[in-house]
Amino acid sequence: MSKLFSKENRAVLTNPLNLDNPVTVQVLGICSALAVTSQLKPALVMGLSVTVITAFSNVIISLIRKTIPNRIRIIVQLVVVAALVTIVSNILKAYVYDVSVQLSVYVGLIITNCILMGRLEAFAMQNGPWESFLDGIGNGLGYALVLVIVGFVRELLGFGTLLGFEIIPQSALLEYGGTYMHNGMMTMPAMALIIVSLVIWAHRAYNKEGKK
Amino acid sequence: MEHFISLFVRSIFVDNMIFAFFLGMCSYLAVSKTVKTSFGLGVAVTFVLLITVPVDYLLQTKVLAAEGILGVDLTFLSFILFIAVIAGMVQLVEMVVERFSPSLYAALGIFLPLIAVNCAIMGASLFMQQRILLDPETSSQAIGGVSDCIAYALGSGIGWTLAIVGLAAIREKMAYSDVPKPLQGLGITFITVGLMAMAFMCFSGLKI
Image (tube, chains in turn green, brown):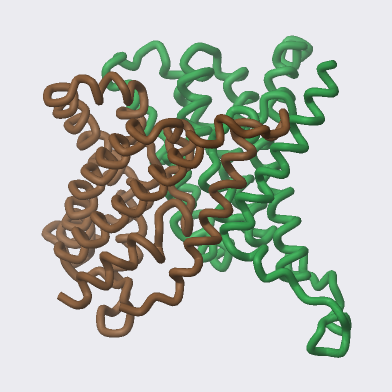
C-alpha cells in the first residue's frame, strides 16, 4: 500500500494542482476553461468530466502503450478518447440534461482538449497504469480548480447566485429600490479571458515568492 | 443566396471562432508571435475547415442519421468518425504543404499536425451538427445543405485567421512594452484577447 502512494506518486498527484497546473502553467485546456464557466454548475460538471476522462484514457493508453505502432499513435489515442467522451456525453445527457444542454458542444470538444492529448503523449506513453491514473486525476483536478474559481467569480458577480442559490438578495437590486447592479459583462465571453489572466497573474506571483 | 451571405458574414464577425466561442485557443496562443506564421496557420486552418465540414455534413445526414443509407440511427458514432476524418484530412494537408511550400512547413513545425486536435476544426463540425436541426426560414445560423456548410466553414476560417493575425500584430508591438513580470507572456496575451473580444461584441447587432 505504501508503494502505491509513494513520494513520487503523491507528487504526480499533487503537482498539477499548484506548481504544474495544466491551465495556468502548461497552458492547456484553455478553450473550455473560458467557455463553460459563465455559471458554477456547468464548470463543476465539466471539471469532473475532464478528470474522469483524463484518468481513464491515461490508464487505457498506458496499458496498451507497448503494442501501439508508432505511426498510428495519435489516431489510436484520439479513438480511445473519442469513445470515452461519447460514453460520458451520453451519461451527462441522461442524468443532468439541463447542464448538458448548457455545455452543448464543449462536451464533445473534450476530445480535442489539449490536456488529454498532452498527458497521453507526455506521461501515459512512458509510464505504468497506476501512475498514469494518478497523473490523470491530478491534472483533471488542477483544471477543475481553475474552472471552479472562474465560474465562482463569474456567477457571483454576473448573476448574484451560486449553483442557483440566490446570494445577493433581490431587495438590494436597483429595480427593487436598492443600489446594486449585477455586472452583466461577467456573463460575456470577454470577461472570462480577463478573469483567467488575473488568476494566472496571481498564481505566477504567488509561485515566484514561494520559490524564493 | 441571401442566406449564404448572411451565414458567411455572421461566421466571420458575430460567431467568431475565437472571440465568441474560444475555439482553437491553444495553437492560437502559441503561434501568434509573428504575423507571417500566424497568417500561414490561419490559411491552413481555413483549408482544413473547408474540406472537413462538408464531408462531416454528408456523413451526418447521409450515413449516420436514421434516414441515411444504413437505415439505423448511428449518431453516437459521430464523435469518433468526425475526429477520424479530421485526422486524415490534416495528414493530407501536411503532405500538400510539405510538397508545395517547404518554408511554411518548416515555419509551422509541430503546429501543422496539431491542427488535428485544434478545437476549432472539431468545434465547427459539432456546431454544424447542431445547426442542421435549425429552420433556415427563421434562423440565420441554420445549415440546410452543402453550400451552407461551405459558407460556414469559409467564414469561420476567415474569422479565425483575422483573430490570429490581429493578435500577432499586437504581440509584435507589445514585445517592447513594460509588462509586470508575473503578467508577461500568457497573462498579458489573455487581457489583449479579452479586449479584442469586447471590441468584436459590437458586431453582435449585425443584421444582414
